[in-house]
Image 1 (cartoon, helix red, strand yellow):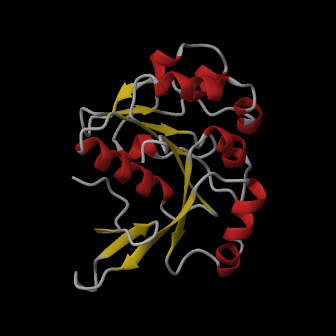
Image 2 (spheres, rainbow, N blue to C red; image 1 turned 90 degrees about the vertical axis):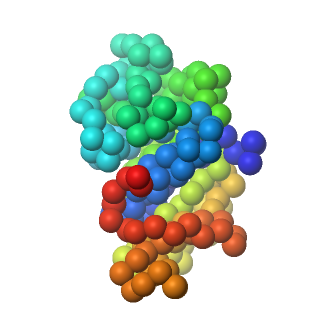
Length: 207
């Protein structure tokens, strides 16, 4: 959807596969010809640099601290020519306070001018509030739920959580769900109504 340009990806707790989902979604969209920016806004526990086999470099933290301009933190992903990354950079002492300084919205506005889609990987909503701070600047939210892993109490509270915190255009991603017809060892993930994407749940980037 052209109106859902900024897509935030989150989950309730760590280990549900949100970074796996955001990485594969970014690559998939890049393969369709769209220019995609994937941001690692998990300033507490970043993982995207590992998934793309990259070393941490100057990133979002340095931009938020006004040490560099936005153009300095946009780097090639190495996975597809249409996909660029913004890594976290050095981890700040207080990520939430840093995100609140107003520079995050300016970064997204800059990226709007250069990319068709912006995917924002944020921390789980259970431990920290970063996702709620960024939510007003986003157009859509993918909330990842991992099959047989996410505690039932968190699943039951998703709807309430979304409404209380005004997460934009929410959709639930069911991750690591056994796919019918692909063999018992295969897993897939689906998001939204009537949309299912198959793949092997191994926490690796798609080829």
